[in-house]
Image (cartoon, rainbow, N blue to C red; front, top):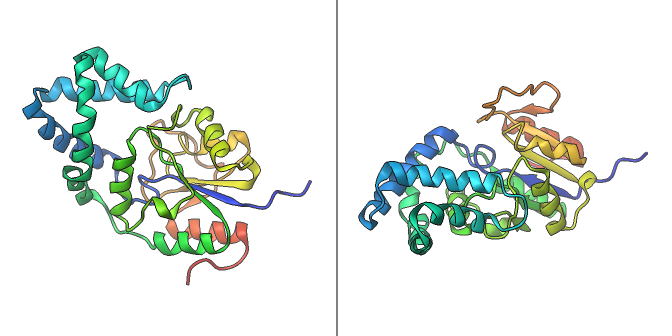
Length: 245
């Protein structure tokens, strides 16, 4: 059987295109967020606990509501229905104070040039970031590496997604949004569980190891893997021909 030609690349964001250690990012981000909401009457420890509760609700989402709805339902169950008004405040946070987390970003690779080369080849590009953030927070993180939503055909955010990684429903929903079959797609990510669960549906995959996230200790030996340069070489092999330099 002939292998389908690759027509789409799905890229994870944090630790993949955006070079950073997740733990350092979360610490910096949550410290800034707690400072932002303190004047609104949210004490740090219970507030952060409710953020994790809301995140957990998104991760367990079964497709019956958006991740946004799952988060705010969980948050309001703790703080009351009036706490939903905080969402408006958070837009300003993600546009401004959230930028303090840029301090944890490492050396940025030539991701813009890579994406441009892929677009010139006619590839559909999807930013397949775990959709636990609103659109504005994804826009801000992309800006740290000189990218924007315009660099992608589709971006997953909590407003539109009904599942999270590693749920295969996330990948089914994303592929439906871009109109692609699994065999046409490559998933590039830094987490063998969250990102390479997609291989169960028939996608190809590459595990980028510069900022590897593998908290469960999953066996990564079955996967094509390596640093940014190795990832580019993998794409060149799959697509045929040079992409950079």
